[in-house]
Length: 142
Image (cartoon, rainbow, N blue to C red; front, side, top):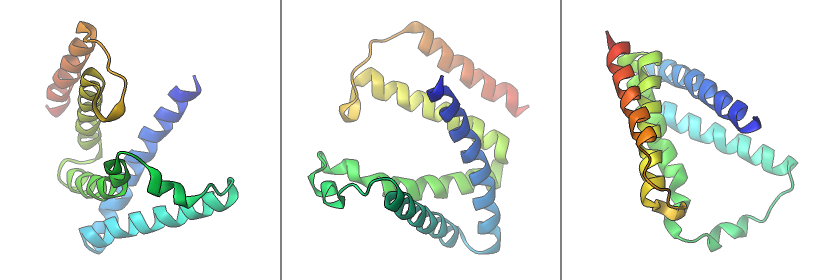
């Protein structure tokens, strides 16, 4: 139950953040806005690290495979793409497309066991669920 609540909160926060970042972009530029997001995220992570146990930073250099450390780079491009999509499609349509893309890519990652994730078997109900989500995009669009 706790995982469900956290996931719902995450989705809500992403929607609000997308709107905030898009408004900041209108008043500055996309890379200034995205940079601000990353800088303030780093500052918040630093504050939280100081108050939650201070695990060793050196552990980062032992992370394998190395490409797992590219999350921040992906984060910059996620911020960029969210800002662009919210600016051109609006918050609701953007969120719908983003979530459907997340579900489909996450299922493919599980299905093929990519990036160290335990491989899951194919399930028709998941494919049907993705198809229903895609149909939902078409319905929402009109």
